[in-house]
Length: 131
Image (cartoon, rainbow, N blue to C red; front, side, top):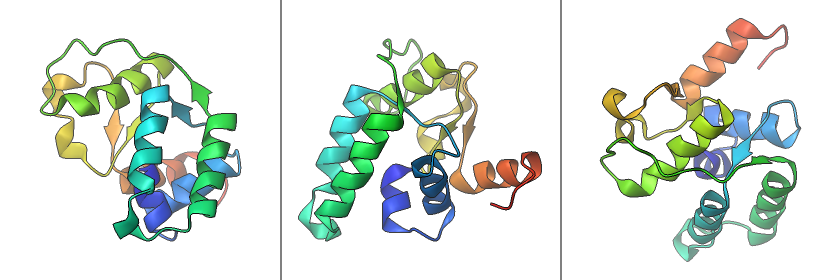
């Protein structure tokens, strides 16, 4: 979600990222997730302004609620995705992802998984403010 939020600031992921950076919405993180974001967002083909990327990642690191996620006990299609669902589980949070197919129902346990659009729609129904 964070990568797509940087790539598409006006889309649902961008809206969620903006809410998190404004500290209107909590954001959970884990050291392995931050390392992956730093690696992915530094890729030259994305042509991102690295000062902006650093600013965003520093804010996520500073204000995000960090946990050390335990190994995920349920089989996942891609083991690299386990840290994301394990982090959401450790935080008791919703996992918001644009890759919802990577998290089949049988692998989720009790972790709610939503697309960025579904999450924005949930916020609109739940909050007395415009999102």
